[in-house]
Image (tube, rainbow, N blue to C red):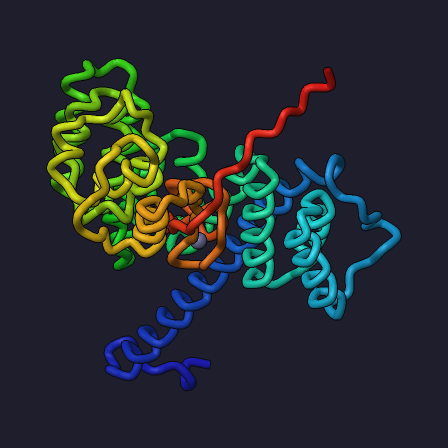
Length: 348
Ligand SMILES: [Zn+2]
């Protein structure tokens, strides 16, 4: 027996010892990873079990899972999600997430589950799903963004800002989202003095010009003099609907008389009797002004709202696109409309 083992003084003994220790460490690391994955899987299944009894319309006891079901059921769940049948989509995502064995598919299904909970307005459940995914996979950028969006929807702005920390570490540019959160935090702050709030709003605008529409409209509410003081004729295309819908009594005539574009808007609206001498450069507005000068007073501006990112149309303005969640991406577009004739609906 002794003949098979080198003497402890032999250099070969040290090499064998090092190789043995290396194998031992590798085996230990592998076993530890296996243990962690099992713990994560148990945690995930435990989390999903909380919702199973209320949500899952599929009888998992009579419908045993087979891997070939993954793709068709995923497509079916997505179609339910797209058509707004969130309850059905949620039940399928839960069934699949519980049934698939590999973590890649499991977490992808969990992401869809969180997104569907968000769309269904079940925000706390969505938060639970996202936090659970991140507890196992903290570098998941898509889920970090989703969680930040969710906290913003829940008006938990500090928590939303916390999600930008790992995103920045992962190389993401979160400056637009952070500026937006700063604005939301300030706007919702009811303890701050009005003058201080105005100062802080102007400070935010100096830091990020993309906040112009939000700050201008907020200042109109707080102190319209401050709003008119930051009026910028080069940014009219961002706020033309806000300007159009202002009541005559809410105008600052000194500012109006100082800008041709404002003269065009309020001549077209009927607040001014003298036609502007210059064209505004806004086609629909100039057409209405020309028609009015020629005696046709039926033209008005109508507005639609389009997301620059996903090109979705909306009937009203949103600070964040409801479809793709981009900030500052919804832009106003004006079109020529016709005044509605006032009909008498009286039955008498
Ligand atoms: Zn969009």
